[in-house]
Image 1 (cartoon, helix red, strand yellow):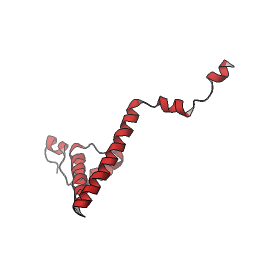
Image 2 (cartoon, rainbow, N blue to C red; image 1 turned 135 degrees about the horizontal axis):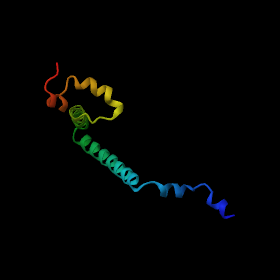
Image 3 (cartoon, rainbow, N blue to C red; image 1 turned 30 degrees about the vertical axis):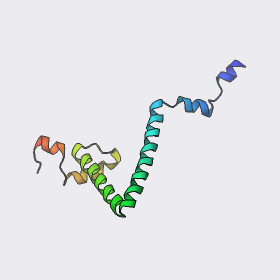
Image 4 (cartoon, one colour; image 1 turned 90 degrees about the vertical axis):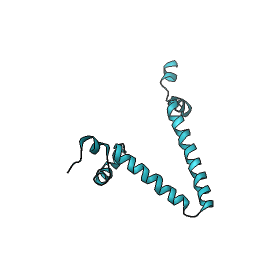
Length: 100
């Protein structure tokens, strides 16, 4: 009888308890960021109809410039960043000199 209980499938609660604490913290941070982004978007929307879009373009442009300079983009976006890196500055170019 004891062997049967030991070989039983883990319950949902046991599976949840097996998830590392770092995963739960990451999930919590992601939820807080989403809540913050929605509040900022609504606040900017009250200020001006185009303000959230201007902020989105500025933040998105900054992320793209950072990714092309440092080459820290997600792997799935590497082909796009390879194309943009031809026209935008990169740390590799500065380290090795201009490439023609």
